[in-house]
Image (cartoon, rainbow over all chains, first blue to last red; front, side, top):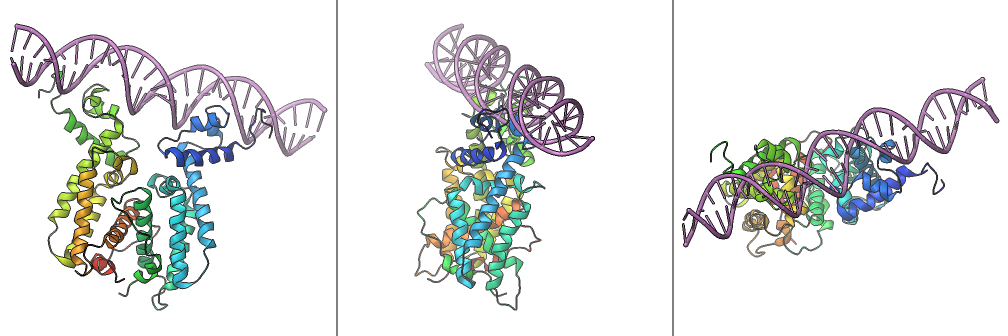
Length: 186
Length: 186
DNA sequence: GAGGACATGTTGGCATTGTCAACATTCTAT
DNA sequence: ATAGAATGTTGACAATGCCAACATGTCCTC
């Protein structure tokens, strides 16, 4: 654990910490393992002892992100419509707080990784889906299409906001109406 | 225009053509101006006579994409609800046909470019927004929040589909219900 | 404790890429 | 024809991902 010992002691978590910072300040494309290694005061290839390659490192960052997201979704209280809108808000808050991380977490090449992400990613989705299912009339049970529709809407809102896609001023989304929109009667 | 002349003759459009192909086959991150130049049978720095830098090249690709999208949205006929759902379908079809291009068109760093995209990008959005406005009760007029909500939903659906985010089988979205969902009465 | 397996870190190197500067060739307009 | 603008080429530099070979430290076993 010494500062100047041959072994760093915490390199893996230190790289992840620096990676989070670099990711949010300059975006994924600009993130390089070499420069992170330098920041950590370690040689250029040291990171490869902890991550198979750059993609695996990004996968680990994304995995962390999903874990945090799960915690924040879990923390939302309430039941029924209130819970759904609280989750929508929490989801948006997370994305606005960590926009590059949010993009990374939902990027194709990262979610393709077999070893990382999938479980936490799936869990965070299931939390949303279940909150929506609670809201569904019981006769319908768990409506996968309604869950996907709701998620699509939130995902779209989030991206349009964090990517600055919308060319006009926007008010706060109508979170309270969220559960009223989905699911709709067939 | 000769094959082996010093001047290529069509380098700009040839690079764009090759760029579209490379973009869809390997994704944006793997696209390199050097390799495109080589494919075009031209030296590694020739592209810089036509595009300021890599980002500007991607911007030109995105611009083309928006132009095509506008054409395809324009082509959708109908009025009222039918037009809205037709546009939703056309939008999705475009994205599914050119997923990497769609991602590029909606990426932050590209839309930041001052010279490209903005006008066509804005136009394609306005087309969607106006179709939705047509559908809005006239007393409401052009409801920017409703337009954004509808766009968010479609954008989310598209990304979830092209990025393969959804961990379950999905049915076709309920396009016919689209205009019934947004706008909703305040 | 001695010694060896294993984890972790380092050096040097290679290929790819973006981009610049300096130079070459061709086209266009006068 | 000739000057100047377009367009293309060569050579170079720095940054990066990643590999191989080697160094150093940790830890477990005897």
